[in-house]
Image 1 (spheres, rainbow, N blue to C red):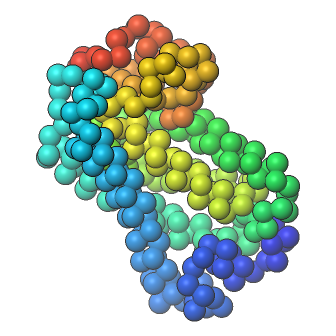
Image 2: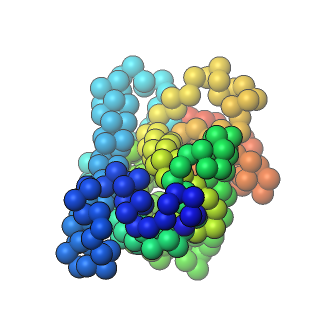
Length: 285
Ligand SMILES: [Zn+2]
Ligand SMILES: [Zn+2]
């Protein structure tokens, strides 16, 4: 941890807006760890249920008829058993994320990360840039780990759970096997141990990630056609991109930007000229 923030576990915990009554408690005390884990678990559950529930409720239920022209897979519908499975696997992933969050905060409190706690410490320009940096790094991490998980040697063990949803719903955003959840959860500890980040930027990154993630699994393309066709938006990944990944499984591995898929020719739309409203069955991985 950078020393400019004053150092010490208390600073970390205070910055993260955790109950002040536990400040000063030894982070190795089992009761403290148990209490803190339950709080992290609650935050992570809400961090899944609220965005997934909002996107599902608004896009897939309330405005479903109005958005029908924007539905990506016209001839196929997600079933309730599928959604129940997506929620149960997501719940197990949230538990994994919570253990990782506990490890991150504990290690931050011990001063083992590059987190800094005064926003002006590295300049306001860096603060803004660090959000973009975190997103770009996550996109690269997601693309390569995701592409590796599609290798036939490890696909079934790690990634098959996510691909059982051929017509994904917002509830699939964290539908990962425990092994894949660990892979996904390792990104943050790796970057905050190497690169300075202000914790609220990490929170903003997490909010942006889950919103893009749930919208990408919504089954509806909400990007206005005029914007989607513009060359300025062509490098942004929309729901169409990831929905094709679920229905065909042969490409579109990235999360936020199209450049990795374009650079390594794994862009399904570019390589097969697939119609956006496709209904094809998934290809073998
Ligand atoms: Zn995949
Ligand atoms: Zn997916």
